[in-house]
Amino acid sequence: GAGVSQTPSNKVTEKGKYVELRCDPISGHTALYWYRQSLGQGPEFLIYFQGTGAADDSGLPNDRFFAVRPEGSVSTLKIQRTERGDSAVYLCASSSTHRERDGGEQFFGPGTRLTVL
Amino acid sequence: AQTVTQSQPEMSVQEAETVTLSCTYDTSESNYYLFWYKQPPSRQMILVIRQEAYKQQNATENRFSVNFQKAAKSFSLKISDSQLGDTAMYFCAFMNPTPRGFGNEKLTFGTGTRLTIIP
Image (cartoon, rainbow over all chains, first blue to last red; front, side, top):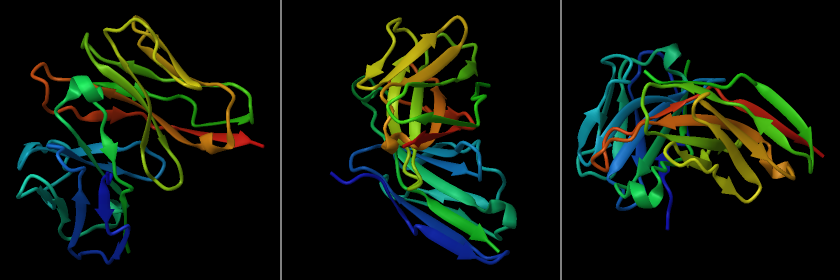
């Protein structure tokens, strides 16, 4: 079966522009996570969806960042008025609710590298 | 809040040798999961091995094994018979599960160790 996919693979934009990053999780996975990985760092949590609702958005750095998952599958991370500091790799992960079977594993996509000029 | 520390930014080892990557963490929880993820240049995070805190036996997956010391809050990864394909960034990660079976099970990552296997 297909893994987690993310589009685009790379995105270059100018400061002040709006961008959308898409994540397509593994079919049937109800939990979806967004992480941000800055250069030389480990991924940092941004937001978590259980189904269609954002159960925890405590990692979003400010109100320029927003994410949706309207049908409980595909998710879009939206960044308004981009800043150079937003440059990073944005990773998406999904997992099932069968934690006892899967041991809590999150399956990651290849990420979107965002560069803000 | 949980923290994860990886004190070795870079390591290198000859092919076929054994290497150990260190990880320490800080938590007040008694039940949790620990993971080692591998991230090659392709950026895809791949699960290497996981450990449940309530299990005393150290996890093993083929050439990969862990040394889990709960009291010391230490979780090191040992790679035996290292191969060129093991070259990658390795991240230690912590997860605090919720009792109901699902919930906000976000991962907290360390800063990673860049491992290079030398031919």
